[in-house]
Image (tube, rainbow, N blue to C red; front, top):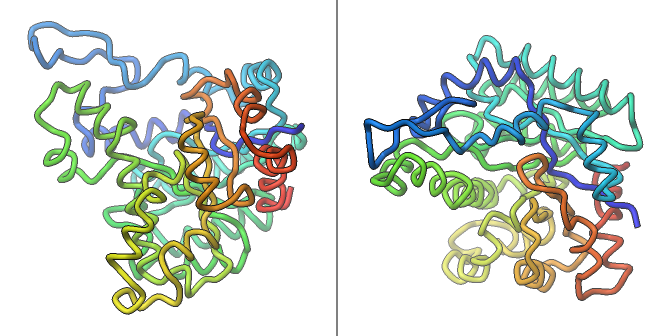
Length: 342
């Protein structure tokens, strides 16, 4: 059975170098790659930082050789590559050129091994008009399969009016938008996640809880804004089993009925019809059971969040799912082939 994984990241040195200074200002608890950080309980003692795993960073920088070896060892047939890190923190004047260079390299990587890789584009998200043009170039000229955003496009979210044209472009091009987490709003970081050591705040505010919560709110805001009603072909991919949102859909429907939202459909119906969910390496059966009951196998994709998560158990989890083999095949590769036109 073929295995296609959709949230598998690469790192670009130029983009990382340009974006990290602003990312550190937005998240002052986030240490620089490979640096040391003051111990919050003992200011006189420095310790190695733990947020940027050097093994993951090395593998992220290696777009092919070690990646392919890891894929072969785990039985992963194809990865859909996307740019990791915090690219939208790059200076505005560099955003377009960095995105173009990264997309060109992604396209070249795919062209060299088209049976092993596909890719999502990165865009100059803070500049919507330029983002539309780069999305069109990436899809129509480079053959990329959509785009992935790491958090918010700028200060706000993609439901802001200035992004209406960009969402319409995804609809017109019939390619998906992957809503990946990113650094939460600074005010939220301090109010909700501050008051602990730097390491604990970082873990809690990002991959422990905060950026998943924000990614779920990002998707919910898109639904409530009517973006899916206006763009009926818009398809969004949500990782980490839907970034908390699926587990509150019934509550949201009860609390925000269509009479209040003005939407053409319920929040749950919109989610079921225009959102795809993937585990992002959270290979946990209870999450799968809930999502399968909610959406069925036909809206579940597969992902392992490489290189931040191991590829260990990639096939074992699919094989162990308590569903028919036909549904396992849909989740493992069929749905990705259909959505991305592979």
